[in-house]
Length: 415
Ligand SMILES: [Zn+2]
Image 1 (cartoon, protein in one colour):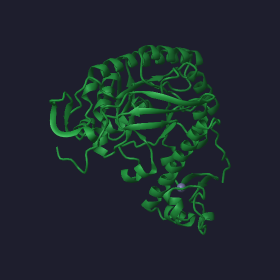
Image 2 (cartoon, rainbow, N blue to C red):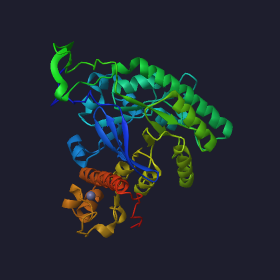
Image 3 (cartoon, rainbow, N blue to C red):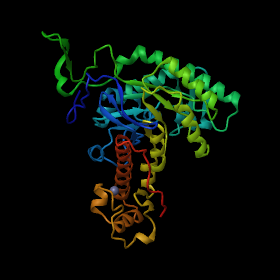
Image 4 (cartoon, rainbow, N blue to C red):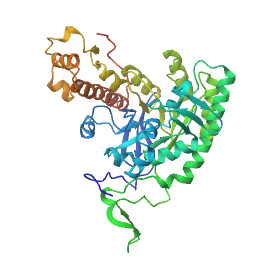
């Protein structure tokens, strides 16, 4: 296969461990080792839905600094299709991104298509939001898709329980998710060697996989990694709606199935924020301390700090990137809506405390002009800043935990 630039290397020697270094109250600072780099936690993962963090080329993204990004299985499943990505080396090779990637299972997106889906024991039939064509996703096909996409961390296929839902409906949904979790794990264990990663780094070689005289495996650049250990991490997802007893049961039974990490799913589905917090806090009590805990789909800068303080290790949200494209910018002085006329003559940087390349170079007046003129560069620069702000916020959170301080978000003023 023709290779553009350099192959995306991964480290086949990495041990699949999560290491909690320091705790401050319930907050934890740790490191999660993945085949494409070690992630400092608590971590915020920018969202690159269609194998791109919208508007940001990968070299610039590397400079902004995320150690892991998220991509969406549902969207990639429909376009360009898993097989295309798999043939091109998985997401790492396809999008030329050398660091870690997490894919969701497609369950949440399918859940969002409320009028276009049909849930059965076997899986979910749904219509594409692109062209109305009919598709099917099941625990097995979601696993096959995520193995083909080749993210470092992949997620069990679950049913996101709607809100509100009564106790009976919430239990039925939770039971379905548990049965699906067991099927996901079974399929994953049987197929995990099919991950399309190319060996790289110091281990890369142009030879076919074969044992050398010294007994070491030599790897061909376009071969699949031939060991018995796949090195993708499959995380389980806790459901149970807003019912704390069911959350406890979901946690216990998901842990019984056994995964190297656990996500709290089924939140941010329209419930009040106080309830989200209460469910997260209650669920955390039942999760193992030595495994990473991932809260899916949150949040504002204030919220990601708060959840890290509660003991969450991983988060993702479209907010910083989506808000940026709508001219909403997060700064150390509060939120700024750059479209406002008050910034038309403002020569100050967007955020005087931000070290990002946008704040170092451009004025608010220029950013306001770009946005008002609907220039493409407005979206790029706004996204660079918002992502930098989120990643800096998490950097500060990690420093606080190391210093024995409870992480706090100091800036809540609105502008
Ligand atoms: Zn900035």
